[in-house]
Image (cartoon, rainbow, N blue to C red; front, top):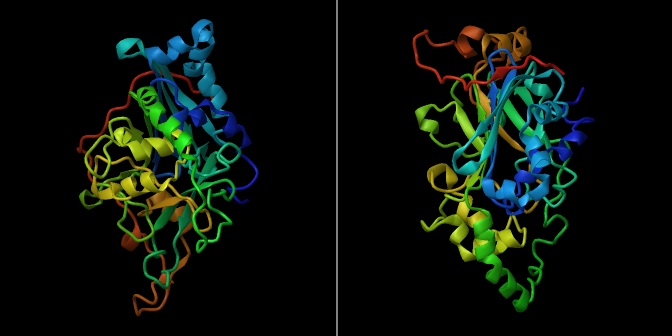
Length: 362
């Protein structure tokens, strides 16, 4: 069954989807999600969702109902749209600095191929109707002719929209003159509203990160990954906050041309794109991958070394073909040659955050 067909409609209703287009955030909102691939093909998903005091106060008489978005019940409701085999491991509601409120939730899904989540690509024109992504593991059995797309004996972890997106410039003739922008008086109105939008984005942070059980491989086709030479096991898919800088070293949201595009919801605007493209080499830039066209967008992907359970599931009894980059003929996959071996025990690991054990399962 194709993991990118059929399901995912319920994700469009998730409150997290509203957090992704940053300009829609009224007051301070923070959403940080980490998707960790485990050795047995399962995944652990952790979410931290925070509402500032200002955002809570804006709810007025509806504050109690608004705060229900942080509740255990809301997490369980979201879980219904996050894929088959998903369970809530723990949930905690916390007080944060400045009168803010936040929730921490940890989910586990039995097979990462079943995972569904909110799209980190709000720049597509059909985001409102196409805001769910899926993940799938793609074993590589043959090298690509370019030597950069497929690498035999590795696993590609791909995050992809459930259906093909619609780019803001799809269907436009690339040779045609660019469309006319808004009239000067409209531009001036947006410029005057710039300080208002900047104030709305104070404290804003949205992050979606992928983490593997092993270091990510430096293979072609992957999106830009920070700290790759340090054999990092994690990479951001989106990471944007009001503290980011632009290419010139000024605050990203203080850049007038960038803010003008944000205010007009031109989330794949040329100024935004120009100031984020070097993010792998500049840790002060936002991690953001805007696309104005969709004809070559196939999501993002990362390469990993197969663990023993993943090897048994995808490579046992399969043949690997390294041509044209190696001259030897295709040969059976051998875990001792291509598999990931867990390092000896004793290394320090990250301690998980506390919270009540739930065990509810979909």
